[in-house]
Length: 113
Image 1 (tube, rainbow, N blue to C red):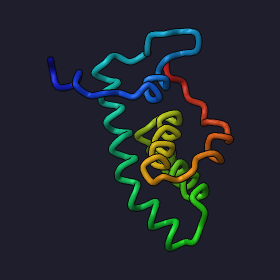
Image 2: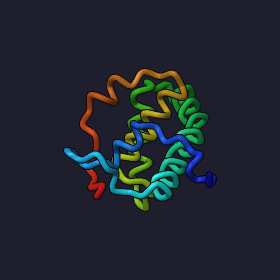
Image 3: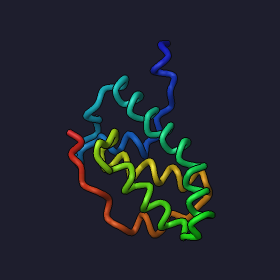
């Protein structure tokens, strides 16, 4: 088995690349693994920054997550809007922060095909 196929890609990430009404992702396994690793790395790298923002600025966790998402979408962006939303949801998960408010706001639109 090759190394790239040993990566477990969570269904929540795979769903970003499955068009409505379809079951097959628009990306191949290798490309999907590369995008997933990038997004997972971003979420992990942002944990310390987000925690520091919340502490030093005295703002809510929801506001920190919104600002992180806006930063991920700033040009030049390395992620598409759907990936940015996934990254901040994963960031909230890593920090054990609630993401109810984040999930209630509409996700940024982005073509995945």
